[in-house]
Length: 130
Length: 183
Image 1 (cartoon, rainbow over the protein chains, first blue to last red):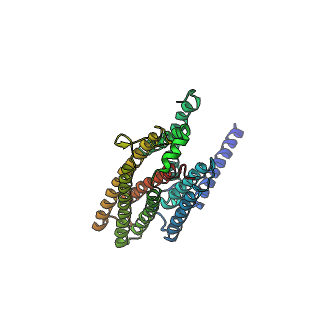
Image 2: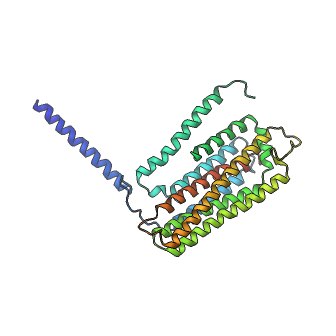
Image 3: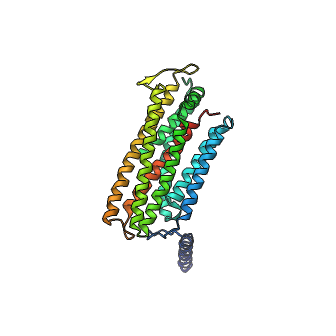
């Protein structure tokens, strides 16, 4: 009996230590789970991201004329996805948001993924495409 | 929900592009490349001015907040002007399905699928952008009244998220419409 109580206590302390470690890690990453006043950022990172976005657009445009064949659309949409991620993290400032906001932003992509995946099962399994 | 719809629309684009690659490549070559390129530049710049306006609100710089917001609305409006010119050119080039359209030499009627996607996608995008410009102008009036201060500016944050989301949609529409079949 005493042994069980002792084990429970040890387990409780271990859980507490784990939670504190997770909280400490989240806090050290600058987010945590609290929603508080945002840290004020310098403007330079925004301007740099904008320049990079324009540069990526130029790269996408340039690659369209290189005759890359099948690699061409893959490259275009990979660049577009990179640009979207940059806009999300840098210009929509997801980078500096609490991790809870990251979770909600990711959830926004989860449902379209289901939509895509379920629609594509029909397309992939259908024979006699017109 | 709007976002889901836009993504589903893009899915249909991929399905049909995969089914009719030659027709899509040919039709895409007829799209006004310079209009699309100028417009992506305008929108990316407008996302920068939008985030700078939020930065100004967070730091309590009311005058630069109004200035950045007006710059954002102007860039959005300029996008619509270029788009309107592009529609005019498209109509002249006889690629507007159901209005003024012919199947050109070497093309099949599948190219109409591309142009239908084009008009629905860019039309919806222009509608979203017009709503965005209205919201930004609403924020200008709030900022002038002093209703957006460092202690409270979430409405501006939300408008900023909406604006950049509309920008992201164009980032995907640009290669889908203008870059397919260029080489």
